[in-house]
Length: 163
Figure (cartoon, rainbow, N blue to C red):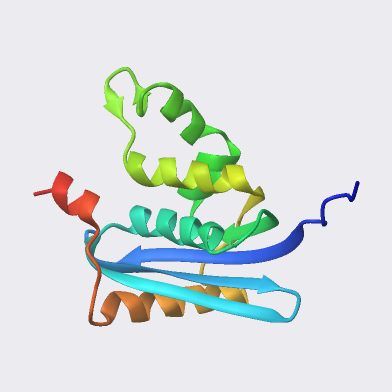
C-alpha cells in the first residue's frame, strides 16, 4: 500500500474592493507554489468591498486542483475573523443569523468559502493593507484594474437582493 503524496504548501494573497461601496468592484489573487506564481482577478458591475474580499479568498482556494496546505493572507479582518474565530460556522449553524434578530450578510459567499476551506488545510492570516507587503500590494493593483475595467461580470446575488 502506498502512502498518499504529501500536500503542497501554497502561499496565497487575496484582496477585494468596490468603487463607491457599493459600486463596480473586483478581486485580486496571487498564488505561490515554490517558484511558480499565478495571478487571478475579475471585475463586477455592482458589488461591495466585503463581497469582493470574500470572493478573492474563495477564488484563491477554488483555483487549487487538489487539497493543499494553504496560508492565505488578506487585509480583510472580516474574512480572517469569519474563518479563524469561527463566526461563519456559527452563523451557518444558526441558519445564517448573527443573532436572533440579525441576518448574516453575504451568506452565499460564506457558504462557498466554508466549502472551499474544508477541502484544504487552510490558515487565514491578516496583513495590514498598503503597508508594502509585495503580494498584497499586487492584489490591490489587480483589484483596482478589475474594478475600473470593462466587461464586468454580474454579482447576481447582490443585485437580486439589493434592487
